[in-house]
Picture 1 (spheres, rainbow, N blue to C red):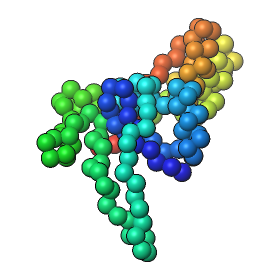
Picture 2 (picture 1 turned 90 degrees about the vertical axis):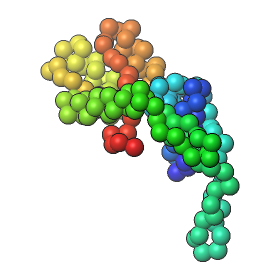
Picture 3 (picture 1 turned 180 degrees about the vertical axis):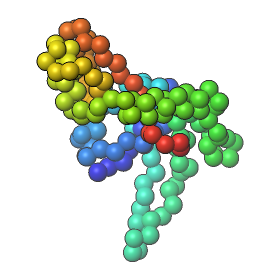
Length: 159
């Protein structure tokens, strides 16, 4: 696994874990990576300081200050400033939405498109579901008249 510091075109920074650099490149090229704060798909790698091991497993300190968390801006000393009240409220609402979806819908994972079609065409009992679908799968569902929505899936805990 590889960890990249990512940044959207609106300036939000966030971490992304990928199986390899090639997987990141494929997902970025396909527009499958989105900002967890604003949903922007204009995401690129942000500059990162390497972590170099010295001796027996002791990592050196990064050479640059860590990137600011989503919704924050560095203060004059380089430390992240608190998120603005509107951003904090938006994140609270998105976390609440996630909790509501998880409590009231069935997770179907990568079978989302298939299961949504089965429900739409009456092959199985209607119920609320959530899972993963590519942008192309979501568009195909919409073209078939299946009501689907994408929501920013923010971490379920307060950061």
